Amino acid sequence: MTAIRFNVLSRLLTGACALLFALSLILTVLSAIRGPLLPGATIELISLIVALASGAGLLAWQIAGDLRRKLDVASLAVTTLSLAAAGAFYLSGTDPEQIINPLFSAVCLASGRALANAARQRFPDTADQDEMSALRQAYGALTLALVSLIGWWVFSGPFDGLTAGTAALALAWPYAPEFTKALMLHIGVRKAQDIGVELNGVDALTAIAASTAVAFDNPTLLADDQCVVTDVHAFDKGSERLLAVAATTERYARHPIGAAIRSISEDWSLPRNAPDEWEEVSGLGAVALINGRSVAVGNTALMAQLKVDCFMANSLCKPLQAAGKTCVIVSVGERAVGILGLQGTLHPQAHDLIKRLKQMGVESLLVTGAHLQTAEAVATNLEIGSVTDDIRQRDRFAVAQSRFSQAEGLYVGIGASDRRGVFALSSETRSEAVLLATLPEGQLEALADLLTMASRMDEQTRLVRGFNLVLRTLAGLLGAAALMPGTAAPIVFVVGLLGSWLIADKLANRLKF
Image (cartoon, rainbow, N blue to C red; front, side, top):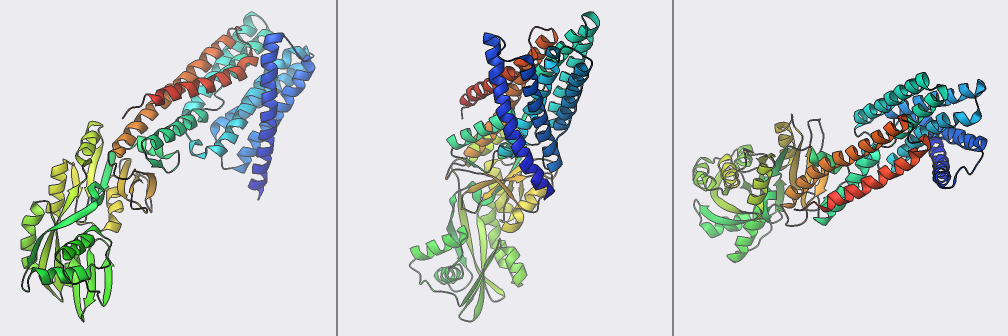
């Protein structure tokens, strides 16, 4: 309850300081154009109110507890020192006009960070981005301010030292580094929409950009998740009888193998009967009760569970699996009565996708429930580096995660909407798959486009961040040299935001796939 009250208080204080900060910016610009508009005492009062309101807002964010950052603590500390310096000079009898600089420095530090905290409520996914980089910039600004303060104090006097030091601090301080990341991420979301990819939050691009490996669930590399029956081998009562029993067992199955068996039974004009009882065993096959007899259609793992004798069936399956086909066994009771060979059609973009991933240095892995020979044949055809076989559907994400336990990777599987989804495979332990993006229907190569875009957006984020660093450093040096007043800090801040937007937009428009 206390945290909630402080959260509400921080929002109110932040809103108030945002209005006052805007007023300060307007007065600064007008004063630079037309000369002083208000008496020094009035400006000092406004600055003090803004600094106190912003500082209180920052403190409320900290007490709320969910947005604690070292940069906020550093901003609060430096704001307090600036206010203390202004108070000390005022109590010592210094001309009130001379304490405007430390007051304005406190305004910029406290209000800038308070507004950044408010923005993080709007863009929470960027709350913990690059904190150490921002802290280094803050320490650099503080060092520059101290050097200029001491230098001017020694050679020109305390007033010039205080003026130059506070100007350098206000101009060079990193007020809102989160804005750069948020800006680039939201431009990235827009570019993803241009290629038909639906991102699950702006932070998805960050995880995708860091990925060095991709694991594919076998059905995602097939054309429309379809396959066809190419071989029917009955051990005794004929191929039509075998297909009729298999189609009845797979009558309600949603797996592509079940659909393929029903399709060929319709082509052969076989009777469509319903089983007495039916159950689908995920990743293994299906079992049914037909005319009082137990029937199963599935892989060798299912047959092993049911204790079915599959010696002959396994021998006949080997040449089919070596050719890259999937072999399923049909059993009645505890005896195998035949096998079916099925051929999956690879997605027309599968080869190009794997080739592009290789060129990008991204490792690929095939996770499948097929027999090892079938899986290796598909992997060889696609030139995928590694393969895991005979894995149940529900276990494939966990298997892929264990294979990439020391790396950041992606898992491509069929999502809830029957579309190809991109999930996070992290070195951190996860209990369930985290959806990052959904690929457009039929556009498998969009995954490579997404990885390319995420990687380039990450590079462009560094360029935009570099622009802001150069801008603040240059402004800080001009302030330290007494060539730019500290009151220009809001203008530098706005120029940095506008410049970041223009550069980011221009770079994003250059992205071609």
